[in-house]
Every structure is written in structure tokens, then in C-alpha cells.
Length: 413
Ligand SMILES: *Cc1c(COP(=O)(O)O)cnc(C)c1O
Image 1 (tube, rainbow, N blue to C red):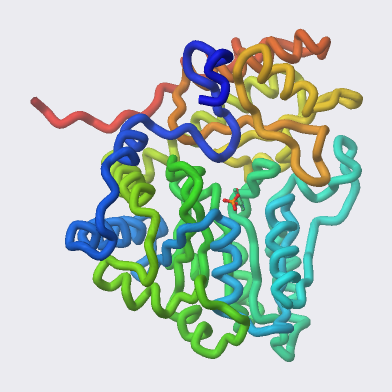
Image 2 (cartoon, helix red, strand yellow; image 1 turned 120 degrees about the vertical axis):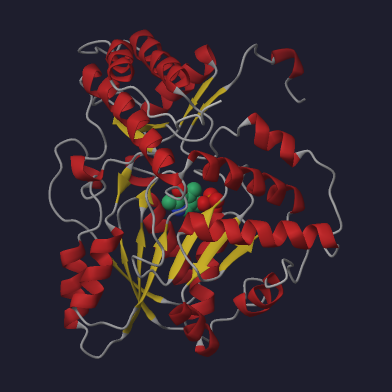
């Protein structure tokens, strides 16, 4: 280890919203011996994980698995379905939506970015980064586009830079109400397997995701769930692609293989993650994250600090953004908390850098890791001289004590 002489005792608190803490069971699966990616055992593993992914994305159609980060899967979604100069409509919910738009522009697409307008007393420089997508605005823009120049609508389901979710079904309804043929693409890199998501039912054409958030894996796998309409579009799309092209991957996936060497050990982990999610049940998984989020928000509200998400209807179950008081550098505070308590918190990204920090409540966490996380934040803020209205630790303890976790019913002995 690089820092052997500095190795702290106990577990590091990795409470950033991805990579999330990886359960021991998955870490052990990752350490199994690497096998022949053309051999029979691998085919069985490939078929198993591809089938299991359908249950998590809630789709009966192909899910393409890339050895890439989520950013690679963003690129995969666009290059497979679009042609140079195509017009794409995006919605700026935060930093990740902005990065996806930047990537689209670099690929030679013509991007149009919608956003919330208006003033924000807490974050004047980042007005609009406190709400989910405005489906009515998307509908209005699509109705104006009578020539159907817009080829795709792209939105982020769980905006990890802010802790705000977007109503994906409402965007589908907006596209349908405008009777617009654009493809619908959704980034649920941090929403999958922690917030409710339904690829087929919500009529999404390409869903983009990644391994290191709700799936509780290390970084290194990207996903594209692909609708029949998107597969059709991929036959005519002319953006350059080779490594990310769906056709050969989907063809070889039928037998559980890939056209190149896939990340074998991460797929062991994925297989384990899918087993864990299936055993708990997705409704319970979603309820668990909502409850954790409730406890963390109770703490932030007790501190008297504003939550980055200004709309209670779209609070993220995955992370909570905390706006620091004016004049307090949120990154200096994060550094102090990391040095003193070995607790990593998410940094403010882009327009909110230095103005907020993010508490991740996903992955291998539980009530007590979250109470300890809140204690680390609270101690750090006190050391930094920040005045808090009340104890967030006590508020979180009360919340978790008053809201018993739903547990799967054990079968009778
Ligand atoms: C993490 C994340 C990304 C970026 O994924 P990488 O794996 O870092 O490439 C994109 N969008 C959202 C919403 C994310 O949470």
C-alpha cells in the first residue's frame, strides 16, 4: 500500500455518491480467478448477468455492457443512434447534464440546452441547479419543432451533482403529447438500483448507466439499455463508431460472449450484485434508499442549512447536497473532515464548486454508518466555526428510530 505507515484503523467512510462502498461479498467475488472469456463457464456467466440486468433496467430488450466508465456509455448512446450535425435537445439539471451536452458537442452533434430560469437567493450563480427537468418546457420546444429537426431528447434521471431526480415518465408524456419522433435517452448512472427506474414502461430508447453507484461495484462497467426503436436507428446512424458499436456486441451476447475481452472479474461482481438485489427485491432496495435519504435530510434540516434540491417532490434517494453558509468554502470543510475523521464527502461540481458538499447514501451503508457520517460532518462544521441550529446527529437518530426499516420476511423455520 502507498500509505502503509498512515493507514488508519477501522473502515474509511466513503460517503461520496459514487464510487459507493462495495459490500464484502462483492469484493470476494471480484477476487476469484480470471477465466477464459471464450470458455463455457464464461458463456454461462455472460448469459446470467445479461438476463439479470433486464430485471434491473426493467426491459425485455438488449442491455449492452461496456468495459468503460459511465462516460463511455454516454458516448455509446449517441454514436450508435445519431449522425453528424444532428440536433439534440438536453436539459441542464446540473453538472452531469452539462458534461453529457459537452460530450455530444465534441462528437459533432448540434446541442440545444434547456434550463430553469429565475433567481435563487442561495445560489445565484447556479439558478436552476436545484430542480428536476421541466417537462412542459420540453413539450413546448418539441411542438415548435414541426420539421422534426430534433433527433433526440436527453435527460439525467438522478443528477448526482445536486441530489435532484427528474420525472422520466413525465418527459415521455411530453414527447408523446407533442407527437414528436425524437429518440428519448436517459442517464441513470447513479439512479439505477437505488431509485425506481423502468426502461420499457417509460418508453426510453437508450438508458445509460454505470457500475459504481447503485450496483455497488467498483468503477469500470458502462451500460446501454436499448429499445427496438434505438436499434433500428443504429442501422442508419452515421456517427463514427467501432469499439462502442452495438451490432457485434448484441450479436455475440446472444451466447453470453463479447467481441473483445470483457472485464471478467467485474462481471463476477456484477453477478453477485444482481443476486443481492434480487434477494432483497427492488421495491425494498428503493425503500431503503428513500429512508436513508429521509434520515440524512432530517440532519441537514436540523443544522439549519439549505438542501441543494429545492423541490421536495424530487429529492434524490441516493445523495443529499448541503449548501454551506455564505463565506464558508465547502471544499476546505470537506478537507478538514477527511483529515480529522477519515470521511470522504462529495465535492461541489461546476457552478456549485465550493458552495456545497454532497453526502452519498448508497452502496454498502446502513443506519449507523450514516449516523456516523453525519457525526463526522457535524464535528467538522463545529471545528470550522459554523453555527448550527441544532444537532443533525440527534435528528438522524430520531428519524431512524422512529422509521423502522422494512425487512424481508424470513421464511418460517
Ligand atoms: C457518475 C456519473 C456520471 C459519470 O460516470 P463516470 O463513470 O464517471 O464516467 C455521469 N452521469 C451521472 C448522473 C453520474 O452520476
